[in-house]
Amino acid sequence: MIRLERVDLRYDDGSEALRDVSLTLEPGSLHVLTGPSGAGKSSLLRLLYLGRRPSAGRLTFFGRDAEQLSRADVTLIRRAMGVVFQEHRLLDHLTVYENVALPLVVAGEAEARFRGDVLEMLDWVMLRDKLSARPSALSGGERQRVAIARAMVTVPDVILVDEPTGSVDPAMAARIMSLFQEMRTLKRVVLIATHDPRMAASLGAASLRLERGRLIGGAGAERMERAS
Ligand code: ADP
Image (spheres, rainbow, N blue to C red):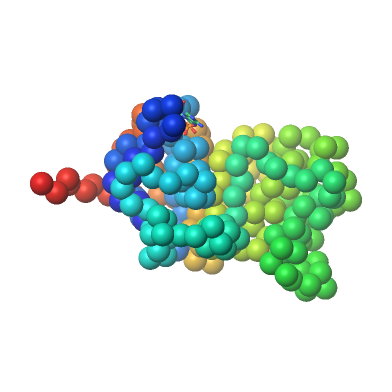
């Protein structure tokens, strides 16, 4: 379980991206985070990826306070996360297959064991015929699908996705959505940021809304009164 308690996030230039955000993300839950551009969605994802620490409040990962994590702890926690951010960070000296396999290689798995899983993921995002291609030879939508396959292939504990269906057609979007549903069934934590307000309803997901850095209602959001 991931918990934010009254979290603020301020950048070095003083701009406040998140204000008093309280939120619990349980295993087996699927949350869709919406809000206008600049509302703080990417900042919240960054915080959950431990790319930023709260300026105030408390962030805990499965009972451990983010403030107390060493660099080695952060590396281990990140290995148990699948992330798809706007910049896909695919490696162009590797093929599509190798990019998707990378988290398994890093985890020390043997190719004989994981090859089938990688091919299954590539089938799921309909890129099996591109497995030897380099990312630079793919369209934007195809690169996004490689990033999604790479994020899911280890069935990570926590899945964080920014705009998953921005550049794919509706049929592909539906396939990708069913992957997220599957991850929820497998008791993973799934959080998807999007500016598409219809996505939560179509996924049957809990809906969270950010406006100017504040969480406005929604399941998982908690109201905490300031102790005085
Ligand atoms: P969204 O993803 O909802 O569009 P962001 O999290 O990117 O929102 O931005 C929230 C606020 O934080 C905005 O006011 C933005 O200008 C500011 N912000 C985002 N990233 C940075 C940064 N690296 N440095 C300073 N301010 C930032």
